[in-house]
Length: 445
Image (cartoon, rainbow, N blue to C red; front, side):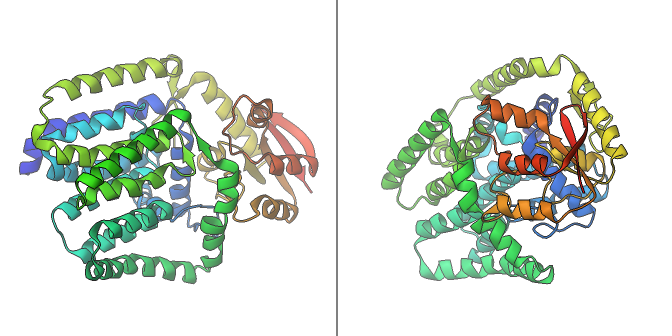
């Protein structure tokens, strides 16, 4: 209670930032969050990752965030769960750096509030902050190892990187052994899950072998983010030479995994936020910025609102199933409802679209391997596997996102992941029957 009395103003500001970002972004549904929500929604329908639908990372996020959906299955509830996780992170930030935690919140706002988008990356950020607190307070190594294991089960690439650099940071075989025991416990539970559900081979294929496809086709690095990443690495290495035993700096190096193989603002903002935690911790007593962070956060809120204004000026409250507490364009809402009516008419269907998760959720339709038609999402040599999977289905109507397909072909976007080879095969090996709002409808005999 003392923490709440002391921090309620900060907490209200924090919740406000989460909600303002929610309303500003979800006037157009964020792809990443819709994909993640779709997978948690699939859990409530009794589906299993790797076996029933594709997932290219470890699954703790979607299982954890499905809990609230069993009470009320709605995107808004999914966002509330995210806010709860961030309030937990906020608590540990306060314990770690006190009132200067406002600087970390400021850093989270810099790149259009991308840290406030609920994905497995945001949960990784929460676990890393908790680990930093545990490290600086010399908590039990078994406990630290257990949290490292949870991080590994949230996103395996980040988890492995953080584990590697944290071990380098402590450089103590006995302590490393204890942490390995802690890591082993959640990993054993996950392995048992894979064996019981007969998903082990699919997991290895999708999450490890598939990276050979994903990295070669989906690698993207913006010049700004790449330059800033190199700068962060350089500053961190310099500080390590001055503070060789400062474990928090090794966590920054481990967090570089956030930006591989995709380094855009969405991924970089998590690395950027983590980078400032040891900076503030090391120089906490010298920092006295008073009201400057609050003023800057206010400016960022205004700037974000101005940038998003074109999306907001023609908005309506959605009436779409499971998205009925969100905002969308009036024109988009009409198009989505038209598409949903047509999908119900051709009920025996699969949907191959960039926003496929949205339509599967809205229709309470179980997800499948076609739901997120991205290169690198199907395991090694994945496109050819999906072509064989398509050949095996019969008597199905296929809704193809022809609008996004044409945008990709036109070259208007360069970092798309839409599997054009698979889409071409579907269109060339089925019969065109109808169209609706950016979709071509085909029939596979």
